[in-house]
Image 1 (cartoon, rainbow, N blue to C red):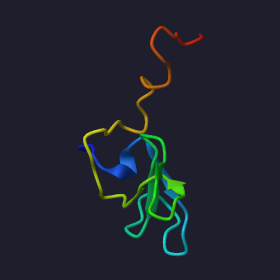
Image 2 (image 1 turned 180 degrees about the horizontal axis):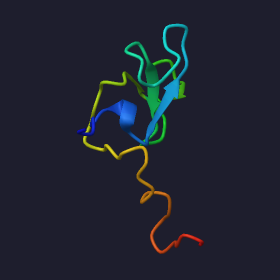
Image 3 (image 1 turned 90 degrees about the horizontal axis):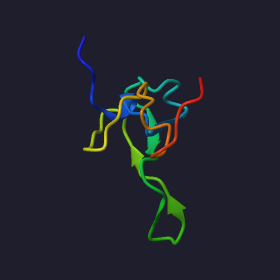
Image 4 (image 1 turned 180 degrees about the vertical axis):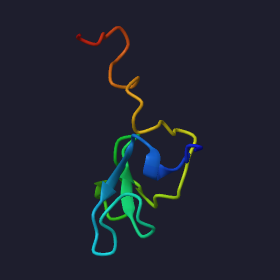
Length: 78
């Protein structure tokens, strides 16, 4: 099986439950990309970008990839 390099499988994507979607794999799912801090919208309120599970970008990291858990120089505790 090939990986889908889409928001639905990305570690930065936060699925938002809606009336139309109860899982991140639902075709009508929506979520927030949390790769970067929220941005100020035209109404002056900050928010993360809303994306569909089938959207994609160049910042994709698989949701099971733990290499981003620690900062530089930090080590995992065994």
